[in-house]
Image (cartoon, rainbow, N blue to C red; front, side, top):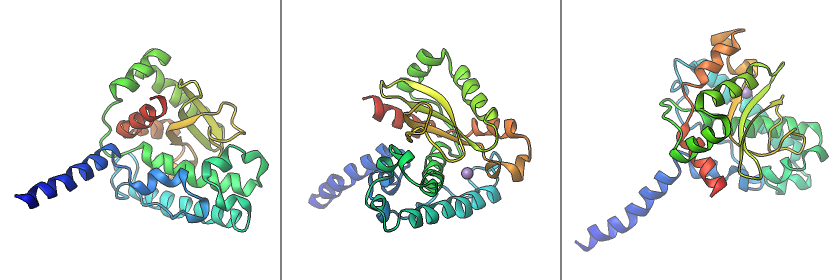
Length: 238
Ligand code: MN
């Protein structure tokens, strides 16, 4: 009996922790809080075929294993031997205009994809009550958010990202950034903390969708990880 009680005492908090993370590993949660020179390339939160048929396995394999991995390796190489290697990604990003382009391009290239993979998952779900309320207040409806966010992705000329972020007042906003910039960087037109990221570089969709970026964007909306997006929102506004 004593052993069972002990087991419950240990297991319940562990289960609660796993639940709170909403599928994010501790490793991922800490990426933005660790010194850059201690980072390890994170695991994908699911298998490479998990997003089929919306995003095909080969695209995920190349996007994660080749593109993101190259950004990660080049980012570590770009900060190696500089003061930046002892800072966190967030510390570097908020002063990114003071760093060489290789730090911005590869640091953004690495961390934007961390947020991207967390933003999607096989079974989408829906925004939490609290996030849904904030979406309705700011955009009028989820459909209007979808329209504005999708337009931000469709109208980004060349390569870049669409974002849903929270600003310093705790308000939601939609934006787009070029190349590997992000709302976390001081070069962004409007700064904030991203809770949802959509990659609109051709490498994110070309194998399956070729030139049809709007079709990829429509598919992206079928696989948004609303659990993670909602928990990020709630953590930022509490
Ligand atoms: Mn990408």
